[in-house]
Image (cartoon, rainbow, N blue to C red):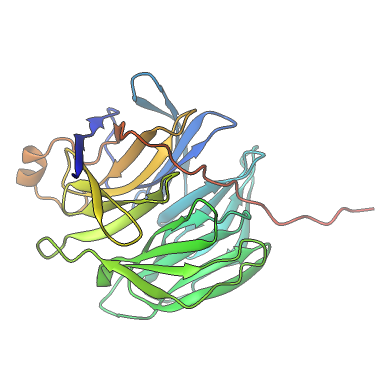
Length: 305
């Protein structure tokens, strides 16, 4: 039987394209982005109530697709085309350019692998298809895992770290491949399952994994988060009071609270009036715990003698 529950609105603020929640346990803070606003938000989560209060804002020129955090608290920010390190004092250093100048693309969803490497994908900003990338920052080296995507999206690993899951929203496919955290070596990409139900514009978006190895996938345009096992079987549905949920993540000291970002982008005044929760953060208790998000491992800076 499919478990069903309803998420609760968790904050007052509204985001045009909220995305990429990340729990930072060492500092007990939640990070997320508002893509079009070029904003990275830090907030406080009340584990008892599930409410989230935005506290700190970092802004950038252009879009911001994703954020990661190191054990020391430094941020790695996927700007429109480059990856930028933000130090504790606010200093910023460009680490890598992922997309060449002049390309009508931007960086989108990203996540940290079990060894601390950062993966990030891109999406087309025009009608080009099959030319976007999924790239990995390994120290200061940039490696392309895929070069044939259209809208690279959610990323997750199995609890053991030996399997990588990824989403190409345009094709509605969730992909899987073997993954060796020690070396970063990957096996062939294979189609895991397709989310092909729903009207046009209903797409799989952000994704996370739970401690049992199941995937939680935001269904953009469908107003829900689905939990599916690796065979694609539907196990649970979280109804969200917004038609455009974008990404789930487990958060809180026990990783037992599912945080869900949502969007208002391209919604009409009538749609916004009908769905006043749009653009808010939501939380839900779903009866399972998540896989801890690894900390990003920054490149080692040579010491100066």
